Each structure stands twice: as C-alpha cells, then as structure tokens.
Image (cartoon, rainbow, N blue to C red):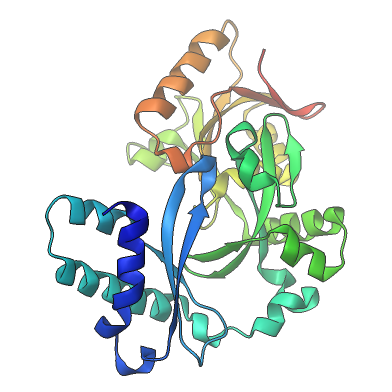
Length: 290
C-alpha cells in the first residue's frame, strides 16, 4: 500500500478500535501542509457531539507498517492517539460560534514567523505580513499543544483589516511576555549574570513559535539597553533566536554558512526559519546582515 491507500484503510477501520462514543463519528483523511512545505497525512475523527475535532498524523504509523508492524497493532496505537489528542486539547468543549466572532476569540490570536520562500503554498491563502525574507502569520492558541493557523476563509469571516489582526496578535504576544537569557544560562553552565560569551537566547514565555518575540519592539529595545544599540540575530528556529553582541570584524559570510549548515544537519525541516543572519538596531529595526 502507498500512503494514500494506507490512509483510506485506516479511515475505513479505525472506528472499530475506538470506544462506543465514537461509533457514529465522521472520519476524514486530511492532507496538511506544515511549515516549510512539509506535507503530512492527517486523520480527523469527529464525534456527533463535538463541533470540531483534532487532527492526528499517521505518517509515522505508515512507516511502521512498511517496516513490518501488524496492522491491528497500528490501528490500536492510532486509536489511543485520537483519544489522547481529544482529551488533551479538549476540542469537544470549544464553541464553534466563538471562531466566527472576532471579539470572542481575539484573546487567543498570536503571531508566528515563517520563511516566505519555503511557504509559498501556505501563504497563498493565509493572511500575512512580510518582514525581510520572513512572513508573519497568525494562529489561534487553543490549549497546550493545540493551535489552528488562521486562513483567509476564517479571517474574512471576521470582517476586520489585516492591520487590526496584526495589532491584536502582537498585543497578545507582548501580554504573554518574552524570555531573554544568556546562552550559558540556557545550557546550564552559568548564572543569569554570566554573559561573557555575549550570546543570548530570545523566545516567548511558552517557547512555542518563540521567534515571534522579534515582533516585540519593547523587548528588542530593552535588549539594546543591556548589550548595545545594535546586535546580531541568528534565526536558530521558529521557536527561538540567538542574540549576539555587535563585534568588530565578524565574518558575516562565515556566520551565514554556519547557519545554513546547522539548518541542514541539526534543525528539523518544520522548525527551520531562515539561512540568513540579521542585524537589529534601534534606528533601522531588523534587517538582513550584508
């Protein structure tokens, strides 16, 4: 079986492995484009008493199948994943009307940064704002681990401007707060005051989509107060960035090569942000280092 045939097989049989309350559930195969064009095969199981349902991905289960795992065991594992996802996300408690009313859902809107060139398909029907080689997109933070990217159809139903969407998302980011620690402290090698390396990690409080902390101008200026008006920014992932004090004679080309190498060999495809090095200054904001 290929992945599509496998997905249909799971779709047709998964209800038999789920508890009684799922006997009338609607099962749907939902191909999904994740960050940087990564394509996954999802399975949505919507019970009649729930307005929406979480999507679980079955690609790793397909790998297990190709490696010889028993199909019944795979079905059982997927059923447990579906139940666990619904419980942890509490999707059944969400009122679908809240999604359609901006004033009821606006406190859950947050921004995230993605690479523009690597996400053209996603951006084609997603409200976004461009900053250098990056795009700001927006998502609904529902519960721990649960989020929904805001696409054009939902955005248009709110009857608001793109600028209002952006302002609300950034305001929620600022309200959440940011984390700024020396790299030594993050690695457990020093105290908060140990900044001899001149390298720091910037993220949001949750650590999820934390590169968006670069949109908090107040935080960037407070960093400038601490380490200097101009500094370098390494886009280590969509979840965090590394801040480096401005130093004379830094080989920008070598730094860019290092970033490319780390992205290619260390960072998961879905977590990659950019191969560029950035400079932040109070006067010019964030820009690609030349």
